[in-house]
Amino acid sequence: MMNAESRLVYKLIEKGYTISCAESCTGGLVASRIVNVPDASRVLNVSFVTYANEAKIRYLDVDPAVIEAVGVVSEEVAGQMARGAALQAGAQVGVGISGVAGPSGGSPEKPVGTVCFGFYMNGSAGKRRLKLSETAGTEASEKGEGMAAEKTVICYGDSNTYGFDPRMGCPERLPRRVRWTGRLDALPGLRIINEGMNGREIPHTAAAFSYLDRILERNAGADILFIMLGTNDLFGFANVTAGKIALRLQTMMDSVPLLGTYTGQGRRLIIAAPPLIDAMADDPFFGYQSEQILTASAGLAAAYRPVAEKAGAEFVDTAGWRIPMTFDGVHFSEEGHRIFAGHMAALLEK
Image 1: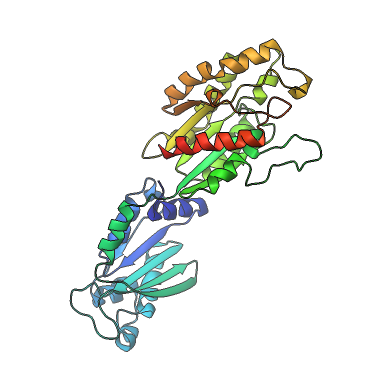
Image 2: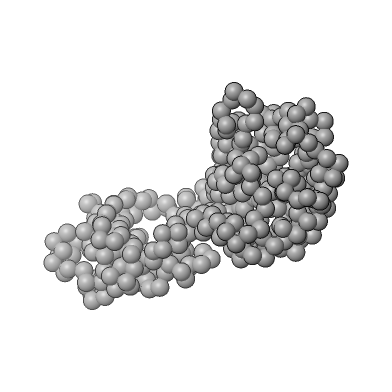
């Protein structure tokens, strides 16, 4: 589950930025939270704990005249600390924190719990003052124990993830509130990134591997990666078998190293065998559904499971979810999207 420091780290990675912190009353707490995040070394090189005024002046180039005029616990000083930290570290982002931690040292103007923040990013500056209660840290911790952090989920798939609507006279895509991804996104604690694309097969070319790599880099902060592909591959082989499609899946796993980053450190990689093609469709997809295609569709779960196990990923066979299809036997009906969303909500809650 994604906490604030993880969001910060992965957003910085996404932008190619580094950060430096200049802390006084927090004594290095912010930096310590950052370094607990995997890949923190990509964004944090140097940080500062400048508790004494002399340290702020010496190491962060804080103007002593400003300290004299407005006091060390001020937005102005925190802003200079942020700028100094960024410039000293050669970072694009700087954060400065100065406050009255207590239990003594406060004043009517700046009581215990007053914290000033300064922000610096590529030459732009910002500042903020907060008044926290003396027990704010304890209260926040207790509250956090009873609340689940938001999970960010990448859903990488084909037209059934995209939400394609094959019915004539209808919009090409089902409304967000109908699509299974949209239904999940409306649930508290979930943020869904829909990376579905009509016609997508399992990536099996250099260009397709590169495109998947860019998707994963763009959404580096996600907690869960859900992959459901293979239906279009059923129609892409002259003599299709479930084994041939599973070999494509294995090749994708071997060719995109970032996929492996979802198999540890609290993240989840879920590989799903798609629902079965409906053999009783009124108007079969592509005009036919041969016995060979139906057999391969039924065999995908058994073929995918060892690929998922080898990768250290979770496996789910969505054929058991009995998803209703539209007339073409391939695309989810509106009821199918509702049922699929229900099963997915339970899966993601684990």
